[in-house]
Image 1 (cartoon, rainbow, N blue to C red):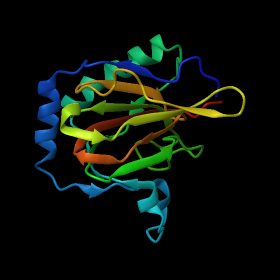
Image 2 (tube, rainbow, N blue to C red):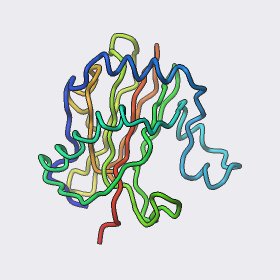
Image 3 (cartoon, one colour):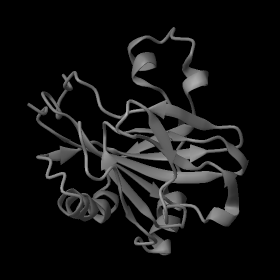
Image 4 (cartoon, one colour):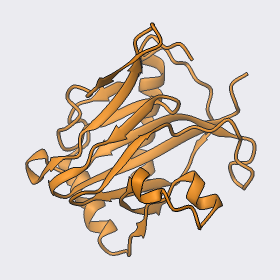
Length: 199
């Protein structure tokens, strides 16, 4: 997929009170081990710790989702992606502690979902929300792998995304990673917006 723009950043757009409320709300639940598609299909898949180490919980609460949806629409329009989409998955709350990370990957799949309510849909746009003040952790950078046009890729750290309350939106096909946390803890939200497969 050829793109003019690979991501859209909203610097410090969400209220810090919203970020704190999400973290406080999530603290009332047990978090699960973050998994990948391969492990979900095969519990005996042994390479998971080389791909992803994080703790997660999914939420469908309207007060969270309604805060995020308008930013998807703005990004889709202003970045000239103009993807058609119809709904989103549950929002993922993620906790990255020391030595936790998520290796380079994409969020999309060529195979549409086969379970309700997403039957026949694929991920179109991904969103990451930084909930934690950058003074509270070291490492944990969000990094894209962007094609250079000559068959190579360059690593790009999005400007202005590290601040608490900042939001990053990008096509789900774009390669990205979360680097290991060196110190402290970083919390984020992830939301995937879905629609019919690209033709």
